[in-house]
Amino acid sequence: MPALLIQHPLYFAPALLLVDLLLWRLIGIGHPHWRLAARVTCFLLFSLLLFNAGMNPLRAAPWPDDLPSHMIATAVQIAWWLFAARCLTVVLGFLLVQRVGHAGRLLQDVVGALIFLVAIIASAGYVLELPVKGLLATSGVVAIVLGLALQSTLSDVFSGIVLNTTKPYQLEDWVSIDGIEGKVVEIDWRSTYLQTAQGTLAVVPNSLAAKAKVLNLSRPANLYGLSLSLTVSPRVRPRKVIEALERALGGCRPLLGSPAPTVSVRQAGPNGVEYELSGFVAAMGEKREARNQLYDLAFRHLQAAGIELLSDADLPAREHASRARALLVRSGLFDALTDNERDELAATMQRRPFRSGEVLLAAGDVSDQLLIIDTGVVSVTLPHAGQTIEAGRMGPGEVIGEAGVLSGSAWQAQFTALSDGAVYRLDKTVLAPCLEARQEIAEAMSHLLDFRQKASAALLVEQPATVPQRGLMAWLRQHAGRRYKT
Image 1: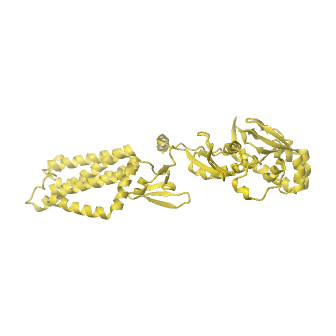
Image 2 (image 1 turned 45 degrees about the vertical axis):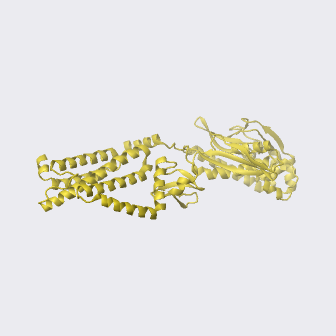
Image 3 (image 1 turned 120 degrees about the vertical axis):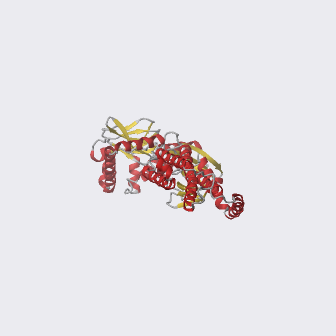
């Protein structure tokens, strides 16, 4: 067989190229090591076949008297240069993937293009014996003309190489480039493509991305920051405002406990004091929900503390009512009451402060009072499988104990204070005539109880899925598990 290969190299050399292409297709991209080994082996066999047959890629093809053989040998030697260029690009691409990951694909393409250009020039000079110096001089002039014409495009290309090498961001990262915020969905020769939160596609030239201020919102992993600002009247003591906003942060469940959320005075002036609330969430998709919830909680806790936003200063003066009456107005359950009925009910309410960690209503207890939270944060927990699950957090204006007041039944949840605060108590005996006179209040409390029971049952049946940790080891474990299953 080896003697047959040596005697007929012009026939078996193209066949060896076809074998290389066939192996490259059959092995597939899932086995890069085997693909690399097959390509290098085929190239070495191809080189051995050429040199044993008397052909040298550094010289013109042999057999000048036999024109068909000479032409085929010339084509085979040119194919050797292209094969060598392809083999070298595969090796460099394998090394780049190992070092900088798939984000280095742009750099791999540019280096591969340069290698093939060198191979073409070398084959023209050695095999075809063309005047390479004149060709290089001509190509240099053409390159200058093209460089001037494509100056902006080349700037984008080389900026893309720098971005892929330094990697300030990668695919699937959430970034802000020159004020444009979105998820990186593609990085090509010229541009970076961002999918914004509004569902649009923003195309940012690589030259602009290389010069602009880039904020990578995905690093460190599973940590996404958010902040919002509120302006309060300068007549309110900052310590009082900060305490109310800290309670609002404590009531926002999507915020991570570490790093801890903070409140700070951003700037102060005669027209108002600006306060900034900042925290972190575990997923980018939670930012909008957390921001909206935090605005609502901040408004409620500021209102519970008797603090109005600066925008409220221009509103007509509010009615001078007691704190208990104002709480009935904010609650929403007692909207059907008239002003006189609301005044009479507020006169019977009693305010009781509580401390952080105090149990306001234990699981299984039947409450004979309706508790309306005035200030502070209360955590609602459910027992499950020997442990407790936090079902939610409550703030000013929300009620506790409606199950005992309506039906005299116990509630399976436990209500524990997460911060210092106070509640107003309404005795069942005082509230009963109000419920009989105003059926709307009883229906609203019944709907609230039904909603909480269904939410608790759903929470106990289906546990919330934990956020998967993204990383190399997690990816390897996931794919290894799939491979063993198949």
